Image (cartoon, rainbow, N blue to C red; front, side, top):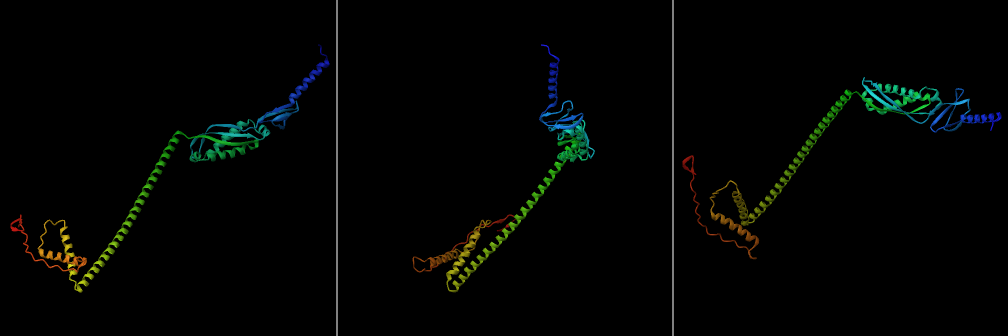
Length: 340
């Protein structure tokens, strides 16, 4: 089949229309924005989805990723305020908010953000002492985020986070810090031990004080009770003596006999219970002892009665001659002529 000139023109026209359609239809994926340039000048920004541009007049300029992105900051040397050299690295998160500004306000966007972050890390960390640098990492992150975000705002970029990953002081400085920490902990332990010893001594002194107070109060109470007991005993003895005196005044001879016998018995008990008495020589007649015993018996019969009959005074027993015990003379070893 031979195609004529008209057919060739129609086919060429159809092909041209298809090419125009393909050139004018643009599909933008989610998370991206495309800038449109007309004769090299920015006109608008294409969002995600199907978009149509004017072929041969407009073209896609920059394809910008508007998702949040991460940027690793390499390790760099930082001189602190107290002239200590440390190594630090970080990570930065940013997001493009305005694709046109990010595409046309700065060249090589990632490199610009990277260098800006590195410069501000050296500035912020260099204005702090080493101890403050190691202990206030959150404050460093906040200052870096504020400074870098303000700097990239004209580029249509939002820095969401800047985090210091690691700070490495020199080895000799780490060893010195370890020794300092050990000395500080030993000092704290000694202080705590001294405080514990002081508190223990205070508590022991308080305990001794309370013990002495309680002991003194006990002795005072015991003395008061002893005095009260002696007072009552004296009152009882005075009452007994009064009763005996009244009985004697009334003509009752048995009361005096009872009183004398009681004292006599107490004296004999004291003599017999002495620990240093081995041999007791008493120049006392047996008739006196029997007389005292008979007096006691008479008092008992008078008190308890004799089968319901009035008590009768017993006749005194006949005196008995008791020979004095013979004692063996003892010779003084230091004077043979003397006898003891």
